[in-house]
Image (cartoon, rainbow, N blue to C red; front, side, top):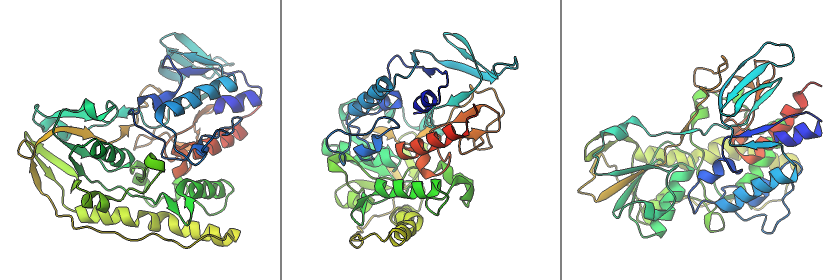
Length: 397
């Protein structure tokens, strides 16, 4: 996207890609992965979505192919197989930065860091205390149910990836225990519109300076930037993911995994509180904004048809993995940010780049695709496109 705007502005540039193939991190997803956002969210600057089924949900390989076709369509000057080892300042007049890569050094007047925020698979240190008999795998390495040995699977993490892999393993006939964290959920559709339709409308309102999605500087607690993405699914035509229904369908729910000692693992109390937090997330964070938008635009939409659902879920303090037949643990615990290669003082105390909507305090250094770069939408294709346009408007001649 940034390459498209740069070309439109007549700016000389190159795009560095450490992989030997285009498609980015989408290539790291599991075989059965599908977009959580509808296909129309892949409409990119200069590359409208005009294929069939705009309201469907692309599988992994189709996403990768679309991103490759985009690079070709806009004639992006990509250099594949080039890893940046260090980005530092340079003071020689024409250039402000030097990039040390495995293909030599590159000097540049401006640098756009387009690496997003999902860098290194994050596995909690508690994993080190689990019996070596148990196969442990991060979702980054998982590709299909057959990757895990026969037996019950403990999935740790109830964000978007955790709930989708719970469903996939259950459909493959596997028994699953899901360790539930403090993750919200959103409905697939609200008042006859996909949640991403609402997200796009609210993000556009925010970009125009009107009430919509709260910007990062309006968060009551900056730690909210580290919260997991609210869960839903693009599988089976797209649907809600309700953890109470998971329990009713045979998934065993436990609380947050907090300690381990060989075959024994312990869970924090508060499982029901986490489930109720998930239930209330949309109403607390988004519903008022949606209703305000309906009133502001005079939209004629059907009423909210969501129906509450609960199922008895007992608290579990501890499990004996061997006795419960758990052969593997699948860590759906997200990713850590890794900006150590940027040799400039631009990170805050939580490891995020200090920016104002992607523009850092270092002249010429900008970021795109970072979590909460402007608001919640910045981490998905809708928000990235809006942020890219904003950055393009900041460039000098």
